[in-house]
Each structure stands twice: as structure tokens, then as C-alpha cells.
Amino acid sequence: MTRRTSDEAPQRTADEGPDRTGEAATDQAADEAVELAVAQRWLAEAQGRVVAALVGGAEPPAGFDPERMRAQAASLVSKRRGIVARIRPDVAAAAGADLAAEFAAYARARTAPAPGYRTDADDFAAWLRERGRLPDPPRRPRWWSRFLP
Image (cartoon, rainbow, N blue to C red):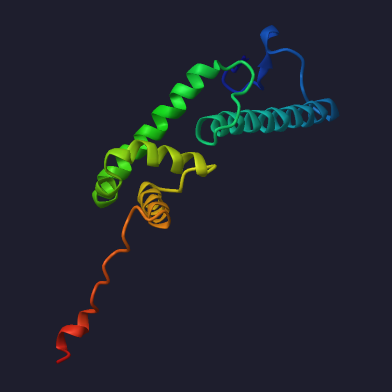
């Protein structure tokens, strides 16, 4: 803690510790930066393993309850399925009663969800179309075709 009185220079108090100037402070700052980078890299890898277990079907990382991870993964697939059904009701209607099973198979076939709900819905529609469960979309006439005889 630094205390100042009018025009005096700052004075150090006992609770501030040693003065960290010079080469020792630079070395310590560099060591802390390396430790921080290692910790950030480790955290990113650990988070990647958790995400892979939740959306990619990978084994849960050590320290996580496998049953809870499976339940959470199923919940995320269910949430995606519900959103896809709201965005593309035609796809949900085409899948019918098999929507849950079809979407679960689609989700298992992909290691990561598409970036964005609309893309996920369109990709699921294409996946159903490849399997013959969804007819090709009707061709929309070009706006200018109404002027042709």
C-alpha cells in the first residue's frame, strides 16, 4: 500500500513485499506468462474433451460421470431437434414419428453440429433427402417466367 502526503514521494509499507524492479521482476513476469500460457492450453484441451463427449460421442474425460454426460448429450440433441422442427416444419413432418430416431442418427453421424440452427436444419433436410425420406424441394419459378406466353 502506498501512502502519500502532499509533495512526498511514495513510501512503501511492510505489507507490499519486496521491491520488484529490475531483472528479477522481468524473469518472474516471464515465468508467470509461460505458466499462464500452459494453463490456458491445458484448459482449452480439457474443454475440447468435454465438448467432444457432449456432441461428438467421445468418451467422457476423467472425473466426469459418464451417465450424466450421456444424459446431457441426449438433452442437447433433443434441444437441437426441437429447434430444427420449429425452423423446418416440413422436415419434421416428413420424418413423422421417426423424427427423434432420425435426428439422433443424424447427430451421431456428425462430429460437431453445424454452425447455426438454420444450417443445422438445412443439413438435416439434406441428410433426410439423401436417404429418400424427404422429397426434393419444388422448383420455384423464376420471377420473370410469369411474363412468358
